[in-house]
Image (cartoon, rainbow, N blue to C red; front, top):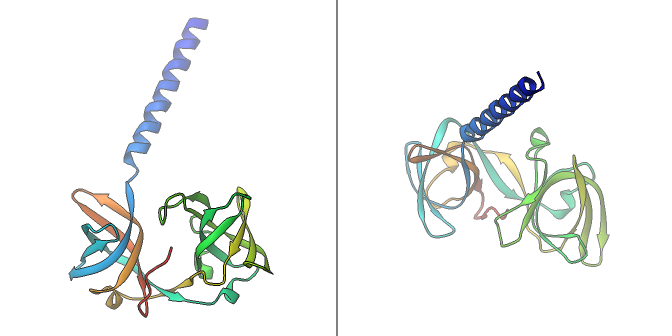
Length: 205
């Protein structure tokens, strides 16, 4: 009887493992793209990436376009939901190299702390501002997310931006963009959101 139970348990574990593997295999692979639009052909964008390569990205029919616009450091207030592109410091703090303030309807987007690819060893923290105090090296901000908190120093010259609703007319040659999660589909990348720098801005995050 114990051998039978052991066999059933083993088979159940194997089945669970297979289901998990299949679930992982079915998750679409996403890539982050920074660069300049070189050409637009209907829904297909040709982008010169910051690495110098050319990629084609097809916008979905329901693509959301957001403008990336400059805003002031003073707009980061207690309760703001922000994304901090940072560099880890020896004392455990994060030194901000860019901050983006999310609109209220995007509160909670990609909450948490993770590695980022703006620079080597850079990080991204999407979290709510719990406290902000002016310090000697800039603004000292405490941010909290569901699994923890980070202390962030924002130097005075840190680019601070926010997202505003845009439209497809902004997706044109010469525009500087960032696509956070283009999905690989067959031989084409596909995006349901494109973030476009306005007024000559290169999205800094």
